[in-house]
Image 1 (cartoon, rainbow, N blue to C red):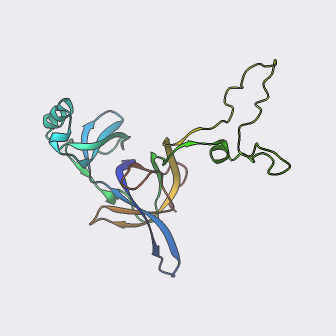
Image 2: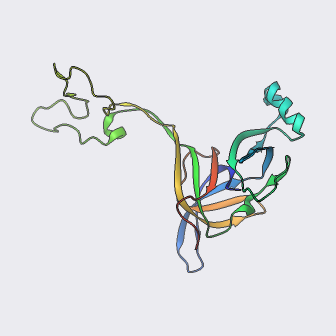
Image 3: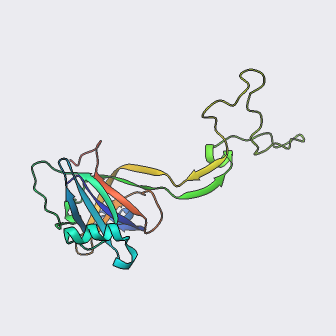
Length: 205
């Protein structure tokens, strides 16, 4: 398998064998139930859901394959040489300390923000009677071209979009509690769902 589904628990710090402090993010990785096996991928489900909270068509799908309902469902690429069965569970032992992973999730939403926070504008003059400190100001549009250029940086909604943090090193694994500790931060708020994949650009030595 190329990865697992999980949940962001939060950030903490641990100490290495040589006494160095390492800032890590704790991820609950699995167990993930296999819901469907396809030609190049498999469908995984994570986090048990109450039957009363699941829509009837989806509940019928889970009953058909004889798997308990799950809240978070995604498809991931599979290893061609390995055989997978519906109902089988994949756990955090897929990874080991020293591996590198890419973690995808929904970034923190920051609401409507001005250009200085959203795009790091320098801002207008702060003295000499200026009243344009954090405003948009001129957009350079008069008779030519007579419009605002497409893609112009302006205030607007910030955050809450799909993003991936790459090449995070796995520091420690707690197989008993399905915990994965990775060095650094990952997208999303506490208890938000994430997809943990083996890193594409970096391989453990």
